[in-house]
Image 1: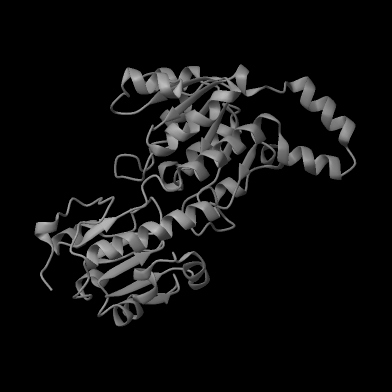
Image 2 (image 1 turned 45 degrees about the vertical axis):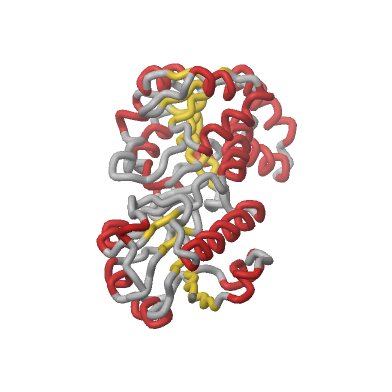
Length: 337
């Protein structure tokens, strides 16, 4: 068997698990900048393709890799993979469901606290010699504890549940919305209550997004979404930038509808300097925190993700179905070697 990675070579080597299968299996690593033809050339004899979550895996590549049986996303997202082309050939597409839940949940809590305490701009002001003025400003405008706030989570998959679990010691009221409510037992376990989206937006002081990128969720945070949020509330996005209409968020911030936003991800990615959310007026800059899409990029996540990648490759080698299939392909659809 051969495995082709489109990834960072140092990272692949660093987190390769110490298993007999990983040690004896041939693999090649291409950078994420590799062209389609370079991928095809390196992957002609590959049965497994492991791809960085923001790197496209195209129909052209899929159709010209004759031995391919599995496309494994390095992350939870798989929207950059042509899952239809893969399904037509009976190729599994799998993701890292749940592997980054702890990491992204911690980033979410970080952004909530940083916004409530005006952390980034407060540090800048202190460095500029304005400690007392800044302290007086912040206290006069109100510094809030999480236990005083109502938090709304949109999406209660692995990450949403982990955010709810981490919020328990802070003791805010936590509400959630998704298509199918949790069972009463799960709601009790995570200390959450279901609310219709409209009611959640209008009543929560912090709204945090935890949905995958799908045709339904792309651009879901639009003008109507932000208009429905509570006045002077905070918006958190540690999911994907594609779920947000950038201009709608800019307008919600400029109008004063939102008190601030904490964003670990922007679209399009790679983020360019002309992104409207990076070019807000000076008085709004202190109300927006943007981190470089590192929520899921912890060493713990990469260790778990690489273990899953190699485990699924081994399952393919043994003729078994891989774990976390996202395109509905089953073993009976697999092409025979």
